[in-house]
Structures are given as C-alpha cells and as structure tokens.
Image 1 (cartoon, rainbow, N blue to C red):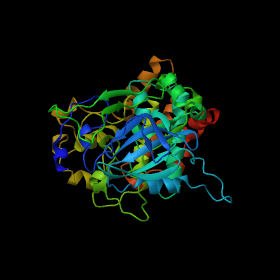
Image 2: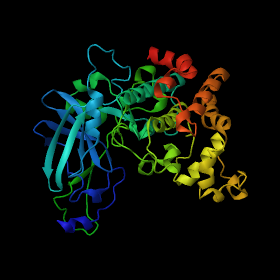
Image 3: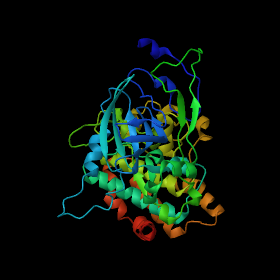
Image 4: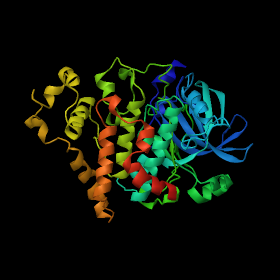
Amino acid sequence: MAVNQHIEYNWIEGVEKLEKYQPRGYHPIMVGDVLHDRYHIADKLGSGGYSTVWLARDTHLKRYVALKVNIANSIPRETKVLKALSAPPPSSLPVHPGYGLVPVFLDEFEVQGPNGRHTCYTVPPAQCNLREISFSRLFPLEVARALSYRLTQAVAYTHSKGYVHGDIHLSNILVKLPSSFDELSIKQLYEKYGEPETIPITRRDGEPLPPNAPAKAVVPLFLGKYAEEFSLSDAHPLLSDFGEAFSPASEARLGKDCHTPVSFRAPEAKFELEIALAYPSDIWSLATAIWEIIGMKAIFSTDFVDEDEIAAQHIDVLGPMPSEWWQRWEARPRFFDEHGHPLESYMENQWPPLEESFETGVQKWRRRIGGEIEEDEKAAFLDLMRRMLSFRPEERPTAEQVLMSDWMVKWALPDCERS
C-alpha cells in the first residue's frame, strides 16, 4: 500500500489532484457507479482538498443530489453543522428568512474502498458558484442587490443558530437550481447539458494504474449561466461549504487557526493570533463578498499575495489600523515609514482608498454597461462597507443590523422582494 503514495500521474486540467488517490485519500469513483445501493453517479460537480462532489440520481426518491465523498478516515465537521441548520424550527416560532438559503442535509453513509473508509453525505445540488460565473463579468444591478440581501440573510440565519461560517467568499456561495431539474432523467440531463467529460488517467512512469485511482478523471459539469445573463428570478444563493464553521459557545477558534483565504480574512485573525474569533469575522468576509457581487474588482487583491501585503492594502483602503497592531506589525517597514507614509518602493503598488476603489472596481464597470450607481445609493453602500470593514471587530454591525442598514432597506430589499 505504501508504494502508492509515491505514484505520480500525468496532469489533467480542471480536475482534482490525482496524487490524492492514495491510502487515506480520495475514493475512486466513475460515472455510472452506484453508491449505497441508491445513488447513481451521473456526473461530477467539483472537488476540494478533502472531498470530491458528485451529481447523483437518488433512485429511491427520484431526485438529484450533490453527493460529497470525503477523503478516507476523516472526521467531517460539516455534517453536524448542516444537521443543525437544516432542522425545521418549532411550529411555535416563525421561520427565519435565511432558512433555506443554506444546504439542506439529506442523508449520510459510509463507503469502503481501496483507500480506506469514507464518510459521505448528500444535499440538494446547486448550479454553480458565484466566483466562476462572475469572473470578469457583472451581474445586473438589481440581481446583485438581491443576491447581497439574501446572502446576508443566510449569514444572519447561520449566526442565529450559534455558528460562525468561517469561510465566506464567492467560491462558497452557490446558486439554487430550479425545482424542475429533478424531472430530468439521466438521459435527458445528458441531452441538455452534454455527456460527462472524461479523460483517461495515466501514470508518469507508464505503469498500469493501481486500484487506488479511477480509470478516468471527470471534468466538473457546469450547470449555471454567467453573471450578465442572470435575471431576478435567478437571484437565489446558497451559502455552502461549512467545513470551517464553528460554534463560539463551545469551541474557541483562535486567529492563528483561521483558514479563510487571506484576501477575505478579517484582520484580527492576523493581529490577534491567540484570541478567539467570533461572528464579526464573518461580517468582514461578508463585506468583501458583497463588494465583489456589486462590482467587478475585489476590494482587496485576490492575486497570490501574502498576508502582510493584504494588511498594507487594508490601510490603503480603510485608513490607519489600531495603534497596538501597528506597533507590533513586524513587516510594516516593507510598506510604510514610522509615520505611516508609504515607502517610495511601495507607492506604485498601493491600493486606492475606499471611494476611489469604488470608482475603479465598481462604478467604472457599471458605467460601461449603462447602469451607473446613483450618488445617494453610493453613499449608503460605502457607509455600510466602512462599518462592516471596521478594524475593530466590536464595532462591526451584526448580520441582522446589516439587513436593517439604509442600503439594504432602500435598495437591496426591494429588488429581493421582486425576485
């Protein structure tokens, strides 16, 4: 078995890392397989570092599911959270408007394979994530507002159930599929979206494949459409991937243990390494997500930059950070002098301040498609961003307070109600 850990495979674009088909890694799956005597694998939806995700037909209930197969012998955290969020509220209480904007937990089981024992679970499938459909594209403004409002409702609901999501960014925000999708047979699915795209897996040394890997890799199916094609009826997001979620009441997630991508990570995770994170860290990440939904360019760089470069951008965009952070920021001399002035070597890479960032990342692009944001809406939006992106966590609004902000109430909510 140990020999398999050193096998290298020829690279295939757009699929999971094939070397993870090894003991304690991915479970080898092929289109047409049936898992748990019930789930017929129709295509692949995606993959992550700890799982592959498949589109499967539930042959018992005649519907499609997203089937997540975790790496072997892992202890999935996500199922506990999804079960809590999926639980219907007591009949005596009103249903939270964010209920239904997170995946509904359906089923769980285990499979045994050549790489170990794998926990699996199912949720309803979704179209696509906002990252892949909005890259270099703009949502119509009314769609962007409605998506922002509903995403905030999903965060508010998650917080109301006692959980911090811990990883909010556009790749973890999906779009719901229409209910009519379940009416398609697998044959009709292929007629509409095309046959699964498979590519034979081969070893670099030319030797035969071991049983640890499947014979073919499956390129993920794209079920969605691109941002500019969205209408209000499509503006139904799902906040997904709760693998980093935690309950502050029962688990201390320290700043040093934060795994949110650095571009969307709250600054206290860097400067307060030994202090527990809480709900305000989600609010910071939510603000960065809303900015991207409304505009074309992220508020902070999404290129391959380090956390100190992002910290410098925070100052560029938002102004001075708390003095106690400033004093102990070891990388500060790379960017600023002791008085806070940018070094000449950094000035050409400086990020624009908030209003200018709005102009270059949002307004310029909206103007090109004839949908410039009016001054009163711009003022309300930037006021909300300033509050959500406060350096001090205790000064950020709660998700419910974000929903009651001027921009949400006057602009986002009306479009949400029309969708």
